Image (tube, rainbow, N blue to C red; front, side, top):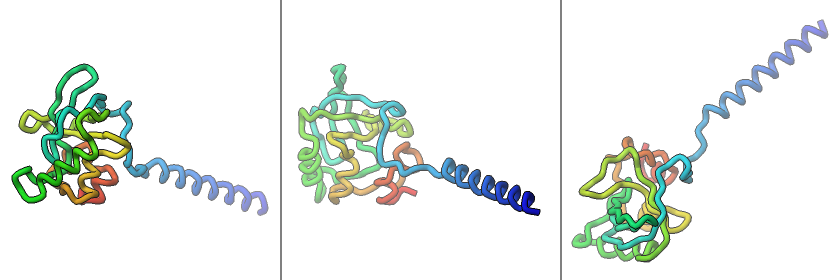
Length: 159
């Protein structure tokens, strides 16, 4: 009887252990960072902040890329809040700032602009504009953007 109880206890412990491992594997960790080994990242500098959601980027290879910031929408410069959004973006990513552009492979170019994230520091300009009320999340693109599952995108309304 003692050996049978011991064997059943070991089986129960094994099943629980396997269940815990399976649960850990199935849970996706929070996505709050980007790995350039898995993304299309381009290093360079900011050439110009056009408005609150568009920048001109100069890659280290000398290519100028117009970038529409993924998942956000800022007011146009002629609209209320538009100049403030541009000024804020310039304060975070001024012309000449070293930066990284990460292409959003889920989005098609928009008005001759590539779509993606721009980092001028540890945080994306996209996220900073949202955090500081200079842009809104555009939920139309959450399902298409490969960045729709990032913590900040979820926080502002992507599902």
